[in-house]
Length: 81
Picture 1 (cartoon, rainbow, N blue to C red):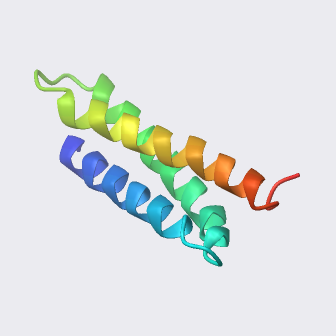
Picture 2: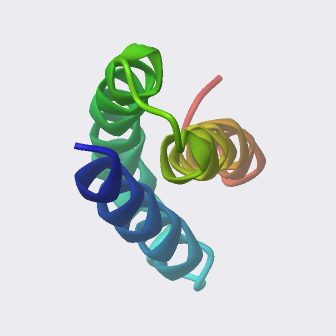
C-alpha cells in the first residue's frame, strides 16, 4: 500500500507540474481532489504497522505539495476568488 501511495503521489505531482503550463491551469481543479485522495491513502499507509515508512512519508509530502501549490496556482490564475 505504501508503494501504491507513492505512485499516487508521483502522479499527483506530475499533474501539478502539467497544471503549471499556461492555459492548462484548470487541470488543478481535477488534480487537487486526486491529490487529496492520495493524501488520505498515504496517511492510512503510514499509520499501518510497517517498519519502513519512508515511501508513505514521501507520498504524504508529494500529495501535500500538489494540493498546496495547486491551490496557490488557482488563486494566481483567478480560478479561486
